[in-house]
Every structure is written in structure tokens, then in C-alpha cells.
Length: 78
Image (cartoon, rainbow, N blue to C red):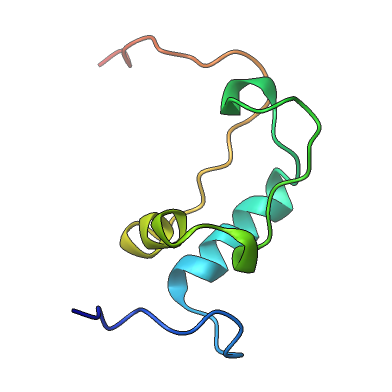
């Protein structure tokens, strides 16, 4: 089964997931220690991502870059 967003890697047309991933990489071009990688390692290009990773970006094509510093896990005050 093929989802409508799938396309061959390198076909020239960018999907919403690829656009979101590239925007995310522009904001956070290197991995940091919170990503499970050694800090400072450049992130993979879209074509280097696994099919599973690309699928994740296609299913939720939103920029996910985080500001530097510890994650704030506190509940918002209402």
C-alpha cells in the first residue's frame, strides 16, 4: 500500500514533511545531547533519513526544533 505523500527520494518535488524537516534543520542544524547523539554532529539530509523517519515527518509535518537548554516539563499554569 502506498500513501499519497510517498515519492521516490530525490524526485525533485518536496513534500510537506520534507519542507518541515528542512525548516527544522535550519533552526537546529546539529544534534544536541538530548537527541541521543553526540552533540554537534550535523543532522542527516532528507535523502539520508530512513523510510520510517521520513514517514514520521510526513504524518506530522511540523517544525520540532527546541530552544537550547533543559526541557521544561512543568505543567502550564491556567
